[in-house]
Image (cartoon, rainbow, N blue to C red; front, side, top):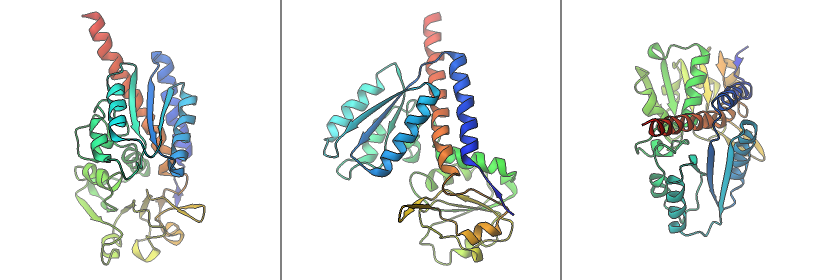
Length: 280
């Protein structure tokens, strides 16, 4: 039987550690979330972040705009948050309405407050790494695989997960294979890989005939199929693996916790800078 990674358990452990550090340091971090429109998926993610904030004792400021809002209004609000010394982190909740220039708005967020690392995803300078990438790296560490000596296939080149993950792994993995769900003969990339990481949002993409027995499967793709969340890994492929992350309950829950780990880092850095100013 393959080992099933419990993302919810690890999320709770991470959040408990963050809460302890917040209490010990007596920090009062503020997270500002800019939410534009009424996308139902965004609503679910905002709710998850808000629940975590309540547990941690983090002030969670939802700044809501209609889908028809003008870019100038959002730009002005981001600038205000950038300059607010009490705000430690700014999250621009995606997706944005197509009328807005997403890349332009992301670039406005200060690097030291971009705890979602959307700047990194878009190849701007950023102080953080994306929570999803951090989650995948932590899971790989848990699996016990030696990345340097492993063959790793990453399926998906998306801006939010696949692309930034590849940019990180290229420095960690010698045998790194890169593809997407449109790659011809995809099985030639995955069949002999020790690790297969898929982030395409194509349900059931990775079939049992595409992986070797005992491989490690990291599923970072999520799709809503008639009200049920599905991952990129076919259930029969999972049965063939030695270690896997489920959907739901794998990478997803961890991304929320690691977002707040980035927030804690931002708050500690801000506190350190403030202390230096006060002591000088």
